[in-house]
Image 1 (cartoon, rainbow, N blue to C red):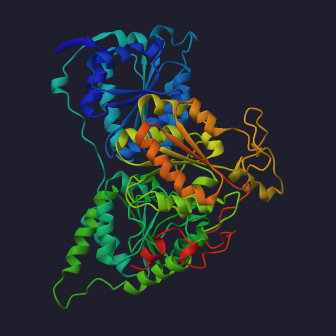
Image 2 (cartoon, rainbow, N blue to C red; image 1 turned 180 degrees about the vertical axis):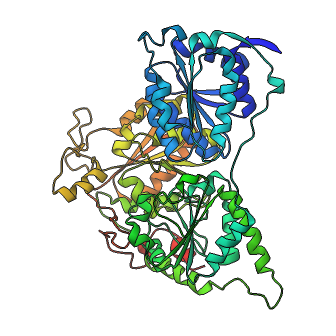
Image 3 (cartoon, rainbow, N blue to C red; image 1 turned 120 degrees about the horizontal axis):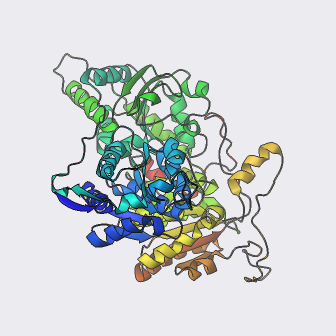
Length: 602
């Protein structure tokens, strides 16, 4: 046993648990913890400009890193409350992050001391555990339990609050004999797997809905193997996008009211059976439950027992880790596929799969516009051309995210990083920095509208200081575009315009960007980054190429600001059979997102 401060023990535990990537801001009440990180040297720390930004960086890192857990650190009081939005975003999407906050001395907690706030009570509804540690000897156990909880069952965040006197206290601790606690994850039984497969193979037009639980479980390969073995098309959810590559012959497109494909919705409506694996039946995916479920049998597999039946009652439910369930169903399916002659083989779904591929080839939205100002659809067409299948996209909310999900292509797991349920404005930039930490050397492309970009824009300086290169595409219409579109139902347009004449950025009256307000190029350059403005559609490809070169040369974030037409209505609706298509469908391959039409015919 060795006598040491509690913070030294905590840092050693972080290292042994593999949580060696931290994002945060030091302060008086957390300085002892920082001194321990400095003394031991096993944790890399990225200095954020805002504590909320630090929490989003940790979130982005966890989503990208495939197994490692991001850590965010702040001092007492507002540091913890600033992290609440980050905890919400992580909790909503089942992402484990560890938030560590400093706190006033234990003896001051009930005296309304400076920056003494009950952060554990505030954070509790948004975490798997929120604990203010009052006894020094409990610190190792609190961290040990935190990692067990974050990894067990449905993943999620934890907050540990450390009073400064608890941080400074000495305890006896032996890191050499420390071991992580076992992680509990439910697994489907063989009987359950056989029952699910029986229900699937009894159908004529089955679909697999692949949720984010498959990504969390690292089970994309099993999903693709099962789909190929059965010949059944796959519909990824927004959080499961990339579990099967967009160009796979069995990838049937996304379903929903906003982040969806017309061909995906049509195939779901034509199906007679759906097995959802690791998904929540989120309302933007289902729309009206009666429309979504009518005429279809449902099997639902999820790691969280209370998710089964939460939105609607499935015909059969299984509580299981997505990877374990896929392994079990695969085992039974392989046995049936290899059955002796005379036994019932697996059904042939080739005609159904071809029907889904035909929809994919014919129901593409038009993207090939030459308008000036630029229509957003053209931006995503050019992004598809410029960025290859190894690209990881990061985005959060708004018309930019909705249109991006409708028109971009994703070719692997953890290559679409999206704050799906919470969707906090400003998440994109700091999350992208965390993704760069989690995917060193890979191409990371963030996507924001101008308003999302202006939230937490200061975090660009973090990328410049710490050499975290990525490309940030900002589609600028100087509007709160999604809110403007939703206000159509109220026959109004209220407080959604961001446009003004910027006295510090005078532009010729003939400039496309005249009157668009904030000069994002100057702001980005002032924060130590590189930036390019694009006003003509035929300049987009060259701008993306130049951004890639600048990123490689300077190793900083590169902003590509695209000046859009002020008003564009993006396809969406209130029912999956009633999505409003504001633009015409593509008339040919030349009018549709690059490469996907020919790939759909494979």
